[in-house]
Amino acid sequence: MAAKKRCQFQINTDAQCSSAALRIVGQCPHCRNQFCGSHRLPEHHDCSNLEDCRQQAFDRNKSKLESERTVASKIAAA
Image (tube, rainbow, N blue to C red; front, side):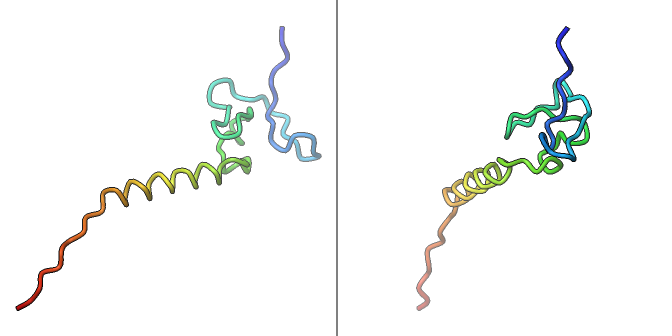
């Protein structure tokens, strides 16, 4: 039987988490590491790729808003 996967929060440090990693929801979609229930959210394990993800979402939203922008023509007053 294989050993249980452990949480990878602060791995190789004195403050390393020794809890078991969650099977389904424990993998971070940004950094692909396994975490326990306490550290599974990107904000809780200081995810290194979280800022890149936020920037990509910001850029996608910005381009979508710019493509949908309407420009009203100015009407000359007589």
